[in-house]
Image (cartoon, rainbow, N blue to C red; front, side, top):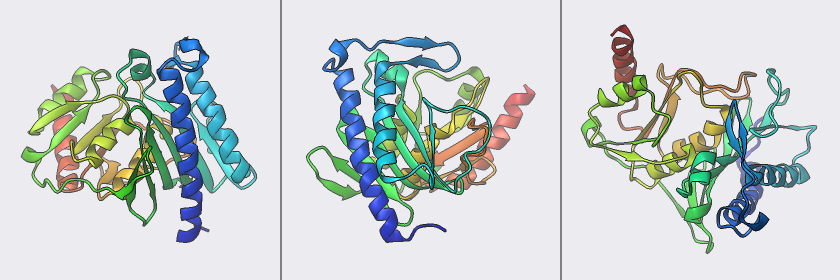
Amino acid sequence: MLQDQNQLTEILAIARSVGWGAANILQAYYRGEANKGNLDIQEDKKDGPVTAADLETNHYILEKLQQSFSTEEYGYLSEETHQGTDPIPHDWVWIIDPLDGTRDFIDKTGEFAVHIALAYQGRPVVAVVAIPEAEKIYFAAQGQGTFVETKQGEVKPIHVSKRNSIEELYFVASRTHRDERFQKLIQSLPFKGVNYVGSVGCKISTILEQQSDVYISLSGKSAPKDWDFAAPELILTEAGGQFSYFNGEPVQYNRGDVRQWGGIMASNGQCHQILCEQASFNLAEIDQQ
């Protein structure tokens, strides 16, 4: 059964600590303080570049979590260790991306993140998104709201904006990863402006910080994976936002196929249903052109 609120709070406290440790590792690599500044970039032809920083951070997260959460009761779904196409046979599954935004890490934009989420029966209930270069982590547990913590230890609740018409909303998009179909969809929606930010975790953090209001994922030849979304989803929804497929259904994780095909809408929640309907309608027209 789902843990009670006190247990979720205890789990989240451990995840927060692990998030800070992971952020420190990435920051050391990013600033050239680890591994003599050598990122040891290895090009993976299928999934992009993998660095020594990814692998060390992944090892650290798994080691720390498994000290508290046994592999008998908890499953582990991590970008760097994922294999196979079957769902992990646990109700409780940690979903981990040790370095979200590897390309931004390599290109030195500073817009990379660590995602750590705990899902129960396919839905996130605890989440940490660490942004090393901002020296912040965002964290949430189901039903408890979202908080932001600085490296100095200051913790405060955080909420999405109240902007409530599409013409007032700011969209957040990748600098890259925008094919022609996606670009046409974005241009068809009358947003007030567009912010360009790397890493899904960093994009969602701009919605929490009220700099942006809407993020859209639209799969093309490839699709985002479970670890891209599980932690960002919960920190958004617990801050008052909404996150769903275009048809309004919740996103499910640990289904076996880790790829999230189709359209996913993340927003401040004010125009969520209208945005989903409009995006679906516009996309159908684009596909007929």
